[in-house]
Image (cartoon, rainbow, N blue to C red; front, side):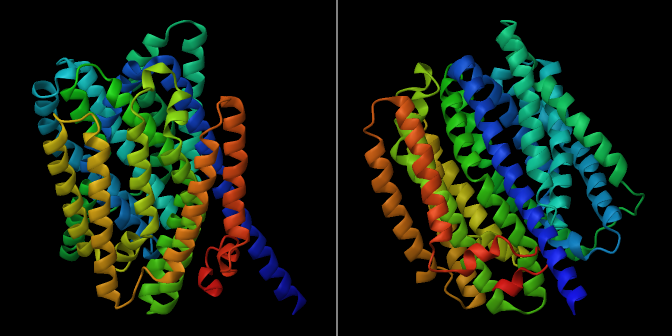
Length: 488
């Protein structure tokens, strides 16, 4: 009996260490990402920084089409595949096929319609190569997540990439050649992704039959359409703004705001990714009550972590953007609106994960289509009216999509996913966070302001987790990844 107890204890410690690694890598990735974004945005200023983000946004738009919805299918199904390397290899082949099909359409659009590329064939080609490498990288990250190795995504997608660019930025800064950093950014990005992607492909690729069943193809198409609608929004907005206005300053301001908010959500994103394969498993086992409890738990945990961040950015947008220099000033409402948009997404919880992991991806598609349509319509109406067209469109689209997802998920599972166990803790945290950060916004000394924000923000997050009346929430963070349901 003692041996059995020791085995369980050892397994528990092993899985706790894996969560701690995920948490540590996510925090380290967020810190490195913020440091790089801060230095690049500050010293390149909004115009040159916006130029870099314009190029990367084009690559990310192409990436969404290349993936063809593979990301969520891999996360949902890879854990059930007998030969997991052969399974992921099918999707590697799919990327090669989609890249060949999309290539001519991309070149026509990039050469004739995207004026800021200046019909530069080399630049246009390199952006496409980068998109292909990013697509392969996304498959690898999904493979890691599907097998519950969540810690590997922030390690490679965050720490590795950000450290790589920090080193290069430092070299150019100290040699007074920052313009070269901008001009060569895409080429550096390609080199960095090659170093990561090629070895992983060599290790994981297995000869396999490229065959998808009819049901798989239908599901793949739904995932593809959904993924495009959700993930093309921000990058498409950057390209639209880059083409609509002279220079890239507005693109730079929107991009840095988006990146800061995204970095704040990295840690809670790990929790959501951890839950996705478990949602799939619980649904397959018919354990709906446990799935509902996990939904509440994951939503509360993301609120504990995200609401203080997003509320701080919404209330103190002026102070945050001021850190990046004069070229970012005067557009505080951009960060405020984007922060509120992220807050809305946080409050409605992982409805998308529930729908996708339970095989109801078509319902998620309805919400995605509504979001994309609302986004484009709002931009079309406001683009020539206000420079805040993109953040307003993001907020409108986010509200519409999340309300639809919440309603459809509740109807499908005959369960109220927005119970008091979700909205009451979120409301309390939001009120406290607003009051605290509103008070801090009146501090004039920026060093004191920054230090107090960090201390107060960390205290709020830790206090929410460890003082929560829902005691099982904090225990979930230390649960064995193959036995989360024991804590529900």
